[in-house]
Length: 63
Image (cartoon, rainbow, N blue to C red):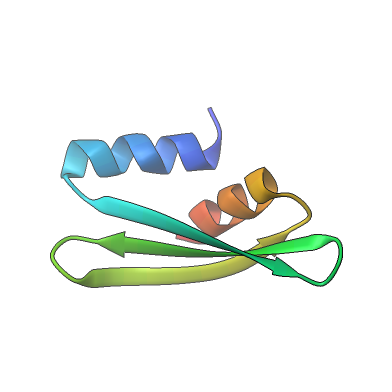
C-alpha cells in the first residue's frame, strides 16, 4: 500500500477531506500541494516528485 493510499483510507475513516493540487515545476518535476480539511484547512503540505504519483506519495508522507 502506498503512502497516498494509506492517507486516503485514514481520511475516510476519520471523515477528513484530502485535496491534491498538482503543478508542473520545471520540465521534469511535479510540485504537489496536499490539503487536509475538516471544516477548514487543518494541514497543508507541499512537496515535489518526478511524476504525479511520486509527488502525491511524497506529499502524503510529509503529512
